[in-house]
Amino acid sequence: MQKIVDDSRLIVKCCKLYYEENYTQNEIASILGVSRPTVSRLLKEGKETGIVRIEIINPLRNNFESLERKIEKLFGMKEVIIVEDEADDRLQTIQVAKAAAEYLMRIVKPGNTIGVSMGNTVKCIANYIANPGKLNLTFVPFIGGVGQSQREIHPNEIITDLARAFGGSFKLLHAPAVVSNENIRKEILKETSIKEVLDYAKLCNIGLVGVGSPTDPASSMMSSGYFNLYDTSNLDKAGAIGDICLRFYDIEGNTDRFEFNKRVVGIEMEALKRIETMIGVACGEKKVMAIIGALHSKLINVLVTNYSSATAISDYAEQR
Image: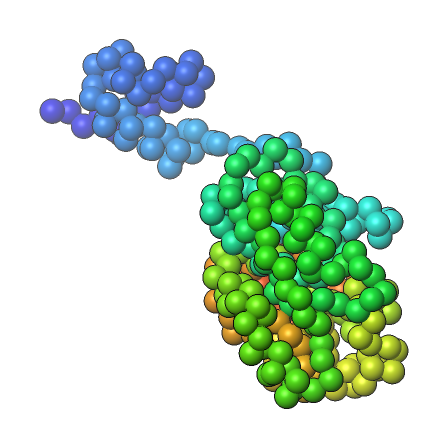
């Protein structure tokens, strides 16, 4: 039988029928008098030789896909989602929260358990959950309650909002987020009700956490009431660059050097690293170094942030 896949005229005719006139491969096989596998090979040859060029036109105003993929590769991330820059901090927080809500609705599966920390951006996510359907989700806090200054960023408040938005259930953690020393923490963790909730948190399929910055007086961490400017100054001198679930880490993501971490009532860091999908949400210039430390720590494997922050993260990694 004559070899026909090198017949340029036939390749062009096959490609025109398929791409311009929308015939199926079976229909083209009948028209040309060849087998369907031969049609498939002709179409492949058309692409490989440049007879057919496929161009993808992104309808979005800005295409951040290249930068997203770059950061994913640099830090070994599962996914990076970048949103437009906004001039106003409040609007920037809303844009990141919306993107995080969309991602959460995309990946969540029926019966999932979702762990949540504190944070202003994390708090906003529930506002943008729409028509989730019946998923039978359970929400659980990763840490105890923060100070009295801002009740709305209390983890129990946040999971209640998310459970309401998804029509799911929740478990509350009735414990302080921070105690005065490690021994008190150990005793608190022996309490059955507290132990049960934190053990349940280890079963989470998804984690949703904010990324804090100890050098930002306006951060949720400062709003918690557990810290003052003197504390944050000392943390800065010790090399603290950020926190997740009130556990501090340095620029390389190391958490062991900070004694404060031993006073936090919440899920252990190693347990967080075992959760399949850990979503970190953070934006703004003051959070860039904290995000870099979080990426190094491997406490998160999904990042939602804004364009300027993502650019700074990429530049930092390349300079290293």
